[in-house]
Image 1 (cartoon, rainbow, N blue to C red):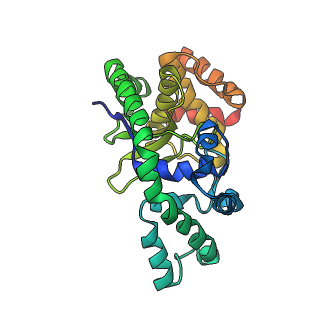
Image 2 (cartoon, one colour):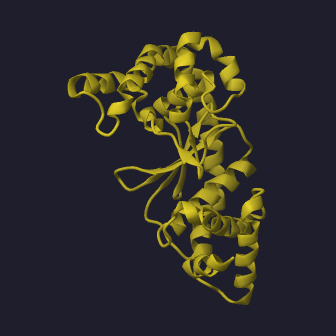
Length: 268
Protein backbone atom coordinates (compact mmCIF):
# COMPACT_ATOMS: atom_id res chain seq x y z
CA UNK A 1 0.00 0.00 0.00
CA UNK A 2 0.98 3.62 -0.53
CA UNK A 3 0.68 6.54 1.87
CA UNK A 4 -3.04 7.02 1.14
CA UNK A 5 -4.94 4.18 2.81
CA UNK A 6 -8.67 3.50 3.06
CA UNK A 7 -9.83 2.44 6.52
CA UNK A 8 -13.03 2.33 8.54
CA UNK A 9 -14.03 1.57 12.12
CA UNK A 10 -17.22 0.68 13.93
CA UNK A 11 -17.28 3.44 16.55
CA UNK A 12 -16.83 6.31 14.11
CA UNK A 13 -19.62 4.89 12.00
CA UNK A 14 -21.84 4.46 15.05
CA UNK A 15 -21.40 8.13 15.97
CA UNK A 16 -22.40 9.33 12.51
CA UNK A 17 -25.22 6.78 12.41
CA UNK A 18 -26.76 8.65 15.34
CA UNK A 19 -26.09 12.03 13.77
CA UNK A 20 -27.76 10.94 10.53
CA UNK A 21 -30.76 9.33 12.21
CA UNK A 22 -31.32 12.43 14.37
CA UNK A 23 -30.72 14.79 11.41
CA UNK A 24 -27.95 16.58 13.27
CA UNK A 25 -26.45 18.85 10.63
CA UNK A 26 -27.73 16.91 7.64
CA UNK A 27 -30.37 14.50 6.40
CA UNK A 28 -30.08 11.62 3.94
CA UNK A 29 -31.51 8.29 2.83
CA UNK A 30 -29.47 6.41 5.41
CA UNK A 31 -31.04 8.38 8.24
CA UNK A 32 -34.50 7.88 6.79
CA UNK A 33 -33.90 4.13 6.52
CA UNK A 34 -32.79 3.80 10.15
CA UNK A 35 -34.92 6.52 11.74
CA UNK A 36 -36.71 4.05 14.00
CA UNK A 37 -33.43 2.69 15.39
CA UNK A 38 -33.59 5.29 18.19
CA UNK A 39 -36.56 6.81 19.97
CA UNK A 40 -38.01 10.15 18.84
CA UNK A 41 -37.18 11.54 22.29
CA UNK A 42 -33.49 10.62 22.01
CA UNK A 43 -33.33 11.93 18.46
CA UNK A 44 -34.77 15.22 19.73
CA UNK A 45 -32.13 15.37 22.45
CA UNK A 46 -29.30 15.02 19.93
CA UNK A 47 -31.00 17.53 17.64
CA UNK A 48 -31.15 19.96 20.56
CA UNK A 49 -27.34 20.04 20.55
CA UNK A 50 -27.03 20.28 16.77
CA UNK A 51 -24.89 23.41 16.80
CA UNK A 52 -22.45 21.93 19.29
CA UNK A 53 -22.25 18.51 17.58
CA UNK A 54 -21.91 19.72 13.99
CA UNK A 55 -18.58 20.26 12.24
CA UNK A 56 -18.13 21.83 8.82
CA UNK A 57 -14.67 21.98 7.27
CA UNK A 58 -13.41 25.52 6.81
CA UNK A 59 -16.52 27.01 8.41
CA UNK A 60 -16.83 26.22 12.10
CA UNK A 61 -16.07 23.63 14.73
CA UNK A 62 -18.81 22.32 16.96
CA UNK A 63 -17.69 22.52 20.59
CA UNK A 64 -18.87 18.97 21.30
CA UNK A 65 -17.98 17.28 18.02
CA UNK A 66 -15.15 15.53 19.89
CA UNK A 67 -17.70 13.44 21.80
CA UNK A 68 -17.60 11.08 18.83
CA UNK A 69 -14.31 9.67 20.11
CA UNK A 70 -16.28 8.19 23.02
CA UNK A 71 -18.95 6.60 20.84
CA UNK A 72 -17.72 3.11 21.68
CA UNK A 73 -16.84 3.67 25.35
CA UNK A 74 -19.29 6.31 26.50
CA UNK A 75 -19.74 4.71 29.91
CA UNK A 76 -16.11 5.53 30.61
CA UNK A 77 -16.84 9.17 29.81
CA UNK A 78 -19.90 9.17 32.08
CA UNK A 79 -17.88 7.66 34.93
CA UNK A 80 -15.21 10.33 34.44
CA UNK A 81 -17.78 13.11 34.65
CA UNK A 82 -19.35 11.69 37.80
CA UNK A 83 -16.05 11.08 39.56
CA UNK A 84 -14.21 14.23 38.47
CA UNK A 85 -17.07 16.68 38.09
CA UNK A 86 -16.83 17.04 34.33
CA UNK A 87 -14.35 17.38 31.49
CA UNK A 88 -11.77 20.16 32.03
CA UNK A 89 -12.78 23.17 29.98
CA UNK A 90 -16.27 21.81 29.35
CA UNK A 91 -17.81 22.17 32.81
CA UNK A 92 -20.59 24.32 31.36
CA UNK A 93 -21.60 21.39 29.14
CA UNK A 94 -21.75 18.71 31.84
CA UNK A 95 -25.50 18.14 31.58
CA UNK A 96 -25.30 18.05 27.79
CA UNK A 97 -22.44 15.56 27.86
CA UNK A 98 -24.29 13.26 30.23
CA UNK A 99 -27.30 13.28 27.92
CA UNK A 100 -25.25 12.68 24.78
CA UNK A 101 -23.07 9.96 26.30
CA UNK A 102 -26.16 8.32 27.80
CA UNK A 103 -27.61 7.98 24.30
CA UNK A 104 -24.34 6.49 23.05
CA UNK A 105 -24.49 3.83 25.77
CA UNK A 106 -28.16 3.12 25.18
CA UNK A 107 -27.86 2.30 21.47
CA UNK A 108 -24.29 1.08 20.98
CA UNK A 109 -24.92 -2.66 21.42
CA UNK A 110 -28.08 -2.56 19.33
CA UNK A 111 -26.20 -0.86 16.49
CA UNK A 112 -23.39 -3.42 16.69
CA UNK A 113 -25.82 -6.31 16.52
CA UNK A 114 -28.44 -5.16 14.03
CA UNK A 115 -26.91 -2.49 11.79
CA UNK A 116 -23.12 -2.74 11.77
CA UNK A 117 -22.85 -6.14 9.99
CA UNK A 118 -24.55 -4.77 6.87
CA UNK A 119 -22.67 -1.47 6.99
CA UNK A 120 -19.34 -3.23 7.48
CA UNK A 121 -19.89 -5.17 4.25
CA UNK A 122 -20.58 -1.92 2.37
CA UNK A 123 -17.54 -0.23 3.85
CA UNK A 124 -15.24 -3.18 3.25
CA UNK A 125 -16.24 -3.50 -0.40
CA UNK A 126 -15.70 0.18 -1.07
CA UNK A 127 -12.41 0.31 0.84
CA UNK A 128 -11.01 -2.64 -1.11
CA UNK A 129 -12.03 -1.23 -4.49
CA UNK A 130 -10.72 2.27 -3.86
CA UNK A 131 -7.49 1.06 -2.27
CA UNK A 132 -6.71 -1.18 -5.23
CA UNK A 133 -7.18 1.67 -7.68
CA UNK A 134 -5.21 4.18 -5.60
CA UNK A 135 -2.30 1.75 -5.34
CA UNK A 136 -2.37 1.07 -9.07
CA UNK A 137 -2.28 4.78 -9.90
CA UNK A 138 0.39 5.60 -7.26
CA UNK A 139 -1.31 8.92 -6.68
CA UNK A 140 0.52 9.70 -3.46
CA UNK A 141 3.89 9.54 -5.22
CA UNK A 142 2.64 11.73 -8.07
CA UNK A 143 1.32 14.32 -5.62
CA UNK A 144 4.57 14.50 -3.67
CA UNK A 145 6.61 14.83 -6.85
CA UNK A 146 4.42 17.60 -8.24
CA UNK A 147 4.22 19.60 -5.01
CA UNK A 148 7.86 18.97 -4.14
CA UNK A 149 7.14 17.90 -0.57
CA UNK A 150 7.44 14.36 0.78
CA UNK A 151 5.45 12.91 3.65
CA UNK A 152 6.68 10.44 6.24
CA UNK A 153 3.20 9.84 7.61
CA UNK A 154 0.18 7.87 6.44
CA UNK A 155 -2.97 9.60 5.24
CA UNK A 156 -5.89 7.45 6.39
CA UNK A 157 -9.12 8.05 4.49
CA UNK A 158 -11.62 7.12 7.21
CA UNK A 159 -14.75 5.89 5.46
CA UNK A 160 -18.25 6.50 6.82
CA UNK A 161 -21.45 4.96 5.46
CA UNK A 162 -23.92 7.55 6.76
CA UNK A 163 -22.59 11.07 6.07
CA UNK A 164 -23.85 11.85 2.59
CA UNK A 165 -24.68 15.59 2.55
CA UNK A 166 -22.93 15.89 5.91
CA UNK A 167 -19.53 16.52 7.39
CA UNK A 168 -16.53 15.47 5.31
CA UNK A 169 -12.87 16.36 4.84
CA UNK A 170 -12.21 16.93 8.54
CA UNK A 171 -8.50 16.32 9.07
CA UNK A 172 -7.17 15.30 12.48
CA UNK A 173 -3.86 13.89 13.66
CA UNK A 174 -3.32 10.99 16.02
CA UNK A 175 -0.64 10.47 18.66
CA UNK A 176 1.48 8.48 16.21
CA UNK A 177 1.67 11.48 13.89
CA UNK A 178 -0.49 9.98 11.15
CA UNK A 179 -3.46 11.82 9.65
CA UNK A 180 -7.10 10.80 9.43
CA UNK A 181 -9.73 12.41 7.23
CA UNK A 182 -13.47 11.63 7.05
CA UNK A 183 -15.13 10.67 3.76
CA UNK A 184 -18.51 9.33 2.66
CA UNK A 185 -18.64 6.11 0.63
CA UNK A 186 -21.70 7.32 -1.27
CA UNK A 187 -19.79 8.45 -4.38
CA UNK A 188 -18.00 7.00 -7.37
CA UNK A 189 -14.26 6.43 -7.52
CA UNK A 190 -13.62 9.57 -9.58
CA UNK A 191 -15.17 11.74 -6.91
CA UNK A 192 -13.31 9.89 -4.17
CA UNK A 193 -10.01 10.34 -5.98
CA UNK A 194 -10.60 14.07 -6.35
CA UNK A 195 -11.42 14.53 -2.68
CA UNK A 196 -8.65 12.29 -1.34
CA UNK A 197 -6.00 13.92 -3.50
CA UNK A 198 -7.08 17.45 -2.62
CA UNK A 199 -6.92 16.60 1.07
CA UNK A 200 -3.61 14.76 0.73
CA UNK A 201 -2.09 17.81 -0.97
CA UNK A 202 -3.34 19.91 1.95
CA UNK A 203 -1.39 17.72 4.38
CA UNK A 204 1.72 18.16 2.24
CA UNK A 205 1.35 21.94 2.09
CA UNK A 206 0.81 22.14 5.85
CA UNK A 207 4.39 20.95 6.32
CA UNK A 208 5.58 24.33 5.03
CA UNK A 209 2.61 26.68 5.13
CA UNK A 210 0.44 27.34 8.20
CA UNK A 211 -3.25 27.05 7.36
CA UNK A 212 -5.15 29.87 9.05
CA UNK A 213 -8.80 30.77 8.66
CA UNK A 214 -8.01 34.20 7.19
CA UNK A 215 -5.96 32.50 4.46
CA UNK A 216 -8.43 29.67 3.90
CA UNK A 217 -9.32 30.42 0.25
CA UNK A 218 -5.70 31.13 -0.70
CA UNK A 219 -4.54 27.87 0.88
CA UNK A 220 -7.37 25.71 -0.47
CA UNK A 221 -6.90 27.30 -3.87
CA UNK A 222 -3.26 26.24 -3.87
CA UNK A 223 -4.21 22.67 -2.94
CA UNK A 224 -6.79 22.58 -5.70
CA UNK A 225 -4.35 24.01 -8.24
CA UNK A 226 -1.98 21.09 -7.66
CA UNK A 227 -4.85 18.59 -7.66
CA UNK A 228 -6.15 19.86 -10.99
CA UNK A 229 -2.67 19.68 -12.47
CA UNK A 230 -2.73 15.96 -11.69
CA UNK A 231 -6.23 14.89 -12.60
CA UNK A 232 -8.04 17.88 -14.13
CA UNK A 233 -10.74 20.08 -12.64
CA UNK A 234 -12.41 18.44 -9.65
CA UNK A 235 -14.52 20.85 -7.59
CA UNK A 236 -16.46 23.98 -8.42
CA UNK A 237 -14.35 26.21 -6.18
CA UNK A 238 -16.02 29.45 -7.26
CA UNK A 239 -14.52 31.56 -4.47
CA UNK A 240 -11.05 30.14 -5.05
CA UNK A 241 -10.90 30.18 -8.83
CA UNK A 242 -9.00 33.46 -8.90
CA UNK A 243 -6.27 31.86 -6.79
CA UNK A 244 -6.17 28.73 -8.93
CA UNK A 245 -5.84 30.83 -12.07
CA UNK A 246 -3.15 32.99 -10.43
CA UNK A 247 -1.06 29.99 -9.38
CA UNK A 248 -1.36 28.48 -12.85
CA UNK A 249 -0.23 31.71 -14.52
CA UNK A 250 2.76 32.04 -12.20
CA UNK A 251 3.87 28.44 -12.76
CA UNK A 252 3.71 29.10 -16.52
CA UNK A 253 6.47 31.69 -15.99
CA UNK A 254 8.80 29.44 -13.96
CA UNK A 255 8.75 26.72 -11.33
CA UNK A 256 7.97 28.20 -7.92
CA UNK A 257 7.94 26.41 -4.57
CA UNK A 258 4.51 26.10 -2.91
CA UNK A 259 5.32 28.63 -0.20
CA UNK A 260 6.48 31.13 -2.83
CA UNK A 261 3.21 30.81 -4.73
CA UNK A 262 1.25 31.19 -1.51
CA UNK A 263 3.08 34.38 -0.51
CA UNK A 264 2.69 35.94 -3.96
CA UNK A 265 -1.08 35.36 -3.87
CA UNK A 266 -1.44 37.55 -0.78
CA UNK A 267 -1.85 40.62 -3.01
CA UNK A 268 -4.90 39.26 -4.86
